[in-house]
Length: 391
Image 1: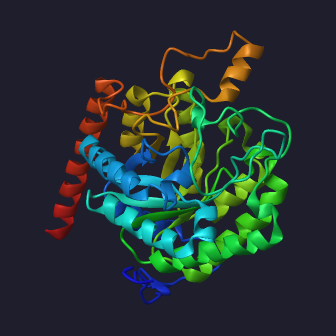
Image 2: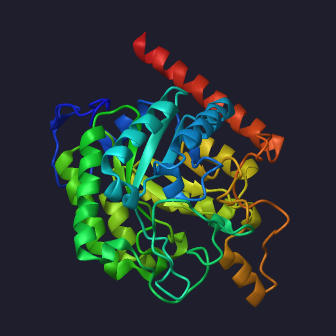
């Protein structure tokens, strides 16, 4: 496409002096060498505050204004101490406006990179509502939202439901298009320093989708391994409990066994995370928490960020500046659980996610002080280590 920088480069099959098996995860040695060669990764799951959803984030309508907002808020990310963001891509925008999407993605990556921020790019996503009476097909154009609801939608995947969530991957022709989507984007950015990690599938098996998703998850990994990008691959575990190792769902065990870098999600307490981290260390690979910060469930910056720093666990909290997506509100499922059992220890007096108010003032200045302090300590340590290596 005209004006788009070609970021594709020659493939490499030799890494750290050893031939790589294209069908297997990196060796632990290769994963650690990659991880230790860069500063501690810390950031957030990012969406500009003026986006109602991910279609709003990536479509042409209003994009110039959205990118201005993103530029301003990514600058604040860097000022806060962050060096990376997690971006969930939107298939339908790529499918219906291919060239425009690819150009906008490149501009978004450039905008982040000028602030010293790399991006983890995410493809699949099983957080989906069922195809029920409240379901509406995704469509480009003006995006509506409901005030007072996590994610800006009254009826969404953030509620509890018993039916399987619906995904466009359930349509065979669209599944093939999804595979093309994954293949094109990884091929285009396989050696681009602006992309730090490929997160192939978000919460695989969520919304009761494990039986339908497994074949797509395997295909995503197969495609990525064929391309052999310089960045590591991952897909998270999100239901792991250290005391129930044998109960890790099959689809999440697949993610753990096929990822170069271990990633997990958890919005629960400090003690729960300690036990999960101890369990994940058995894989002898770098660990990244790609979703955390649930103040209402006692998952806080004050406890979690220093823990991640101490253990050098990469971390991406959910949300940044509060806005139309309203992730400062609790999950609707949390309200449903509390309505059924008021004895549950939830704190509804606090924001659930997000670090900054719409004014760009901190939700809690003490949180930002902690993030800045430990980010600076991590960078000082990394700089010292690099100096020793060079001397």
